[in-house]
Length: 250
Image (cartoon, rainbow, N blue to C red; front, side, top):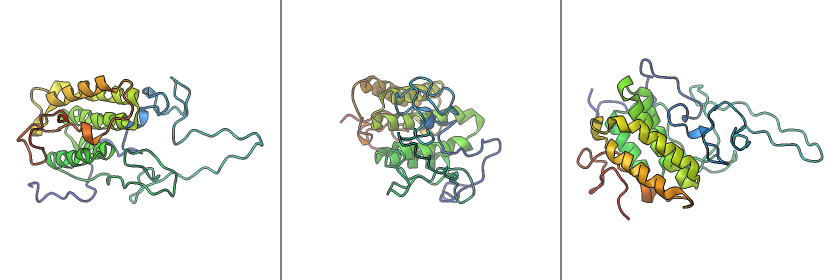
């Protein structure tokens, strides 16, 4: 089946041996939800409600202390699920994937479980990165990770982690951004000489290192101005002229 014949706009069957869809689409592929939003460090035990490094509770599950009057805690909200019954948070999110209060206007997330060819996934992820939406790009790349053959799984994991690293950098979380960029680069490094689909693994590793070096004390990094090129020049129609796997000089 060629790319034009393959369905791309709806959920597809999970590939044999692929892991089940996760709650937030963040763990285990990209570790999005394992970064503490308070101190920016990695939560080594993702199930813990409190960060072992700084003591902060998780952004969505930490219980609020009762006020001085002893107000009762709010009723526990039932777990959100998607149309197919899979656990997935329904909280609205902003353009960088940060949870907003229920009922707030938010930016629509990418549909989960969409079947795409690798080339289509790379093109869609690049489009979202170029639009300054690395959180949404990571969702596309994580779908590709779930469907990838074993020999490519670390490659797609690395791409998703780079998108999450840029997400945290754009949120102003320098420590979390650097941690995920480093992990993503380490996952991509073994593919530097022979990455499939025209993926510029070597250029992406260089891009991640350069961005990490600029994060300390820099504040939020504009995502659209620091977009990596996922594929080498001439390997696909999704590349900008002059792209070389690193963000273009601006």
